[in-house]
Length: 429
Ligand SMILES: Cc1cc2nc3c(=O)[nH]c(=O)nc-3n(C[C@H](O)[C@H](O)[C@H](O)COP(=O)(O)OP(=O)(O)OC[C@H]3O[C@@H](n4cnc5c(N)ncnc54)[C@H](O)[C@@H]3O)c2cc1C
Image (cartoon, rainbow, N blue to C red; front, side):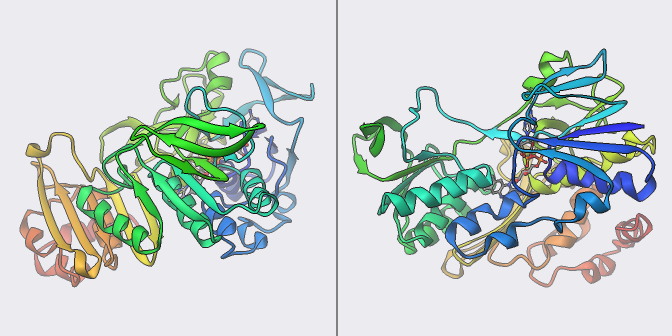
């Protein structure tokens, strides 16, 4: 079989590894428009900050593709510009064509840029290694002293911490009432905002940017909707991502926000699979199909897609939005639905100790299933709590113990949770 993979990142790599575990015969061709060797996108901000070397970004050994028997074509010219589903063929922007029997679309997402954002020097997004190299060069060449980060999500916070570590006076302009609003609730967001401020990162919120101030196509500052003018040499726009669905959409593959997939990561076309930031997959906590633009989800989905591409029918148990990060020495793990829209339908257990930078929250639905978790400062029992979400465990009998630092698998046994544990071990979890 001729397998074609578009995208050389988390999802594409996981697919290769799962295919090769069972199948050394099929040919695999992989295409990517990024010239760089396979790297870990999640570590980019640490490379920007200077806390890791470029070599540390490498996600697999340099020989990986050779060892896996993959014909890899990367860099300018290998951007796939057309997918012809009827002829099972793709066309790259250098004119080369590649045929396939089965294809995996693992082209990820792109950083969103607000309408009207000019293309001036000093304005960046943080998505690719090339973005980081350009930001680093700009800091050096323009002798940058002040930075603004527009956005307070995961990438915005990571970018602000990195720029601050580069020695730039950094201001975050955050549209919502809190930082990390997709990851944390308001109270936990306040603790993290406090830590950022303690580390000299200024936060304006809620605030937006209404004007870019430039001279000779070079960024000089931004104006906020509060009327403030912030002088800056660098602006990083971190306003979320958009799945790269255009290729699939033009080929007639069903798309919503992302490419629509079933439990095997197959699209509505028999020979076309999708995985990662570009795909919509089932989310256990939301109980619906959604895009979870997270590395762990990309890897799980790529693995499942790979198995199904070679005919090893395997269902995806479902994604769960999981964030794990460290902001100014405060560890954060969050899973699932942490700020439910219809709060009255849920019970929430909260432990809030801002003086210790500790916050825990557990969101439980009417069936006594955990739907979301925030652990901040104390993250030791994240594993057992995650397994309870994944297994839809009834937590009513040990609910009072869930916030305790000592809550573990032993506690489950004490409260008759053998059934959950049994399932845990039986499923090889
Ligand atoms: C700075 C940063 C920090 C992050 N931190 C975290 C974190 O802490 N935790 C976490 O879970 N997630 C994090 N993420 C998100 C995570 O990196 C993504 O979820 C993950 O990379 C998605 O993997 P993917 O394989 O789906 O796609 P991507 O990593 O986006 O890779 C897709 C590849 O396909 C290429 N491509 C796109 N279109 C084409 C085309 N037409 N032809 C050829 N090639 C194409 C792209 O250039 C890219 O190389 C972070 C992301 C960034 C940018």
